[in-house]
Length: 273
Picture 1 (tube, helix red, strand yellow):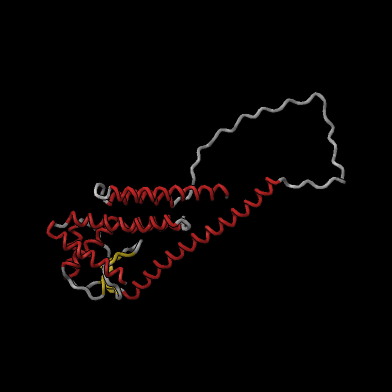
Picture 2 (cartoon, helix red, strand yellow; picture 1 turned 90 degrees about the horizontal axis):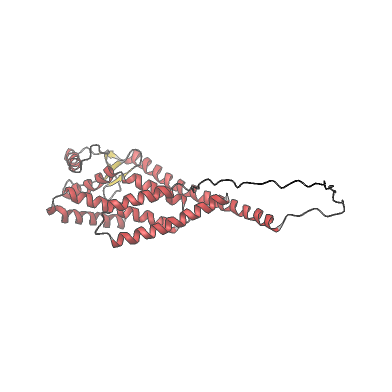
């Protein structure tokens, strides 16, 4: 148990150093390396942090040489009954005390991991229940045609179901096992909708939801480390940047400005709610 805690804290400390290093390098090389490569690096780091195991190499057992036997046997004398019982040495007492502390720390860590997992799973189940009760499949043929046109533009062979969701302000991709693309209840079929659909379809094609799940998994394992939560936030930002970069590669140059304005307006609406 002591070895597990030591390995967990060592892994978390090493991950913190890498998080700071990646964030520092990303600011220095943002114009040189695309955000999609930073997402690959984040994925590798999240996968390592999600497995709290320390791999050690086996070591050889030292050769033991038996001591030579004595020529004359030594008679064993039993201690007199009047002598006090032997007590544990101080090192053994400290080891027993540290073991109990390790058990308490393991319980606290497990409770924190369970709390983060329950919160994440509960949020997902509430969303699925809300969609099952209130979402309505999009029946407007004009919007469906625009949706499939954007899918062809970004080379998405398969597309998630398109539904209307009351209370939603901007289009959003949600769901891990069976993702759906949610639209506001009242939406106009215009160029802004095309850009929003393209943005979300690129998220779907890139499987960004899987990266987000792995990042949350790593944050649950290292819930006590604030830098890991900072990593989750940075992963989300780089996913958005990578999605925008991919969208600009399929849009003609004369539409880049309109796309950027649409994304900024959607981000402002999402932040206000």
